[in-house]
Image: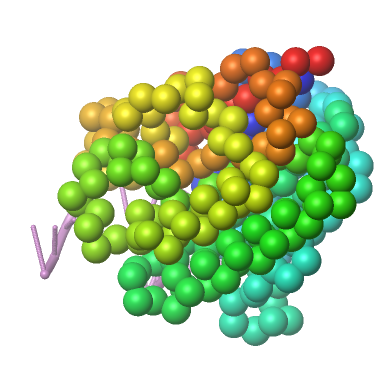
Amino acid sequence: MRIATWNVNSVRSRIARVEEFLERQDVDVLALQETKARDDQWPVMGLEAKGYEVATYGTNQWNGVAVVSRVGIEDVQRGFAGMPTWGDPAEAEARAIGATCGGVRIWSLYVPNGRKVGDPHLAYKLDWLAALRDTAAGWLAEDPQRQVALTGDWNIAPRDEDVFDIAQFAKSTHVTPPERAAFQAVVDAGYADLHRPYEPGPDVYTYWDYYRQRFERNRGMRIDFVLGSSELDKRVTGAFVDREARAGTGASDHAPVVVDLAD
DNA sequence: ATGGTCGTTTCACGA
């Protein structure tokens, strides 16, 4: 089974590229972030015609996550236990959706951006990650044999080599010690990085700003990850970033991360 | 320090 995660930066403006990616890479399950579509706005017709099921969670034009699968979708859960919301608690933020596909629990996560050091959004990001860690640790405490994938845009570069020039991030979010500790806490809860062992280099990125030709010059960041429980980790046979999806006009600013699992 | 480029319910703001 081949799974993937992709911050698509608007599924409505990118649906043709989503369908192209699924077919070109022969993907079974795709987790999407920043769909920027309410559930009722999702362009599902082409996907359903090609045999994909879609589970979405979008409450406004800014947020949105989804799971697209051609191996079935079961037990969809929107949000997770203890997930903090920003601002009015009644206004749910669609940052997490979980679905079981082919026996694997796959989460599509859009970790809060954090904006700037000192911004309350950064505290929110850390709270959100702590809640995710607690909840995800609980899943494995209940049953260590579970195959769980925590995929998505983490908005964290865990290592200095995960950004094109660490000196330029001296006063930025995404690389601060508390954010990196929050990421590591999820790893320590039993979720390994399934991609890095297969592309360990310092110049492997998943995100490149649109401006200043950052993609063409490969000045990017590794901030999208597929983390997996140990039972899932055992099945991994390979992983890579699909840079082709980032190339050319009309691309998202992120590229998909693809992970292959043995049957 | 600023600006660069995308997306959105766009003349503003988030990433």
